[in-house]
Amino acid sequence: MATVVSGCMKGATRPVMRQPVGASVSPTTASNWSSRHSRLIDGITIAVIFAYSGSHITTFLEHAEQAVVFGLLGVSVFLCVPYLFRRAHPVAAFGVMFAAACVQVLFDAGLLVADVTLVFAVFSLAARFPWTQSGWSVVAVLLWLPVAAMPYVDDGYLGVGAMVQFMIGVLLVWLAGTLQRARRELVASLRDRARELERQRDAQARISAAEERARIAREIHDIVSHSLGTMVVMADAASRTVETAPVEAGRAMARVRDTGRAAMTEMRRMLDVLRDDDTASRVPQPGLAGLDRLVDELRATGLRVDVAVVGDPVALPAGMDLAAYRIIQEALTNARRHGGTLLSIVDVAVHYHEDAVELRVRDDGQNPPEDPWTGGKGGHGLIGMRERITAYGGTLHAGPRLRGGFDVRAVLPIEGDR
Image (cartoon, rainbow, N blue to C red; front, side):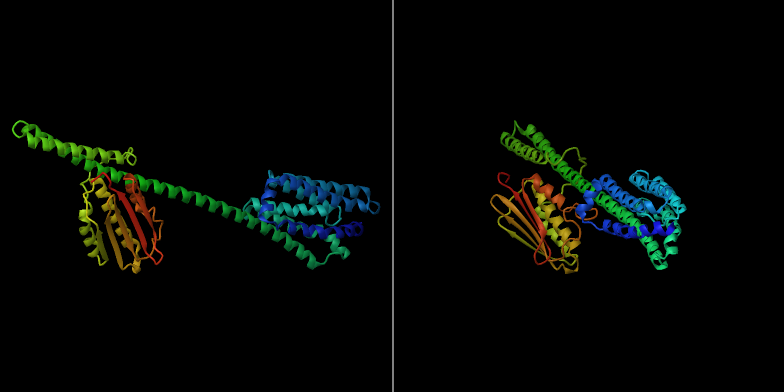
């Protein structure tokens, strides 16, 4: 009996060993398609396996007892059908399939084509659970395989070397499932990490922008407070001299008018930048007139800074003058911070045009290691420059130079504000 049925099973073992190998190699597009149609693929696979297994069993119906043939067909059913439910109930499906495989041993019929589903189930468990939880499945199959294949060994159809190869193949399938699970977890972890980094980057950008707006708000608060204080003093003086010195009183009121208009202009330009931010007070900051002192501070650190002023300097509104000063200050700070050992010179140029003032800071150091628009750890970087420029309708261009170093160029329109 063992000889007859095992003879037909011998011819069925070759496609059994080829199918998992063919299924493990597929292009990315095919893999995506298979994941969307997994149930259809499982159904077709099981139908082919069951038909192939059943045809080989029934072919030798006249040489075997009818009860044995129907019993093997029943075993094939319990090996194939649970495979369809392995995704939803992997442990239960493997348990039913392994129980059917154990019943198969009682028929002393050797291996069946349907036994390949047991190997597939081992792969599914390994790809689904950690190796500490899926290892029992491969151990069970490795213990079952020599017992189930013993009729082949007795009849001389299967040598010990081939048996060892079968067992190694099962172990490799389990390892492949384990590696697939590890790869899937790694990809998921990298995606989560990328999303978290993106959220952190966006949050840091928002925080940097909010902090810069708060700083600008404090500066404007000082400017407006200074303007209002000046207006009150001049108006009070005018009220006391309006009868005794009407000309001087008129001049004082004219200055009040000009100061008020300038303050209103500053407020209109800042409304788009300042929303609900804190407006704590700060001592008014210097403007371009204090550029020499700023440059001297950097020169004192050993950095060579060349300054060129082109054109006739004009009196800028207080807010714009402060913005121009801060832009140069930030560019010089970034040059000193990121220039590294290559940094030897920084060129600062202030060019007064008829309708704009152009600021340019260039260095020959290395490029910033962080994103210059966030300014690295704890810095505002070019975000603050851009907001200051936008508030006054100007433009900003910043980026690495072709021969090394960094170049910052800002243009502030001054038409009608002199």
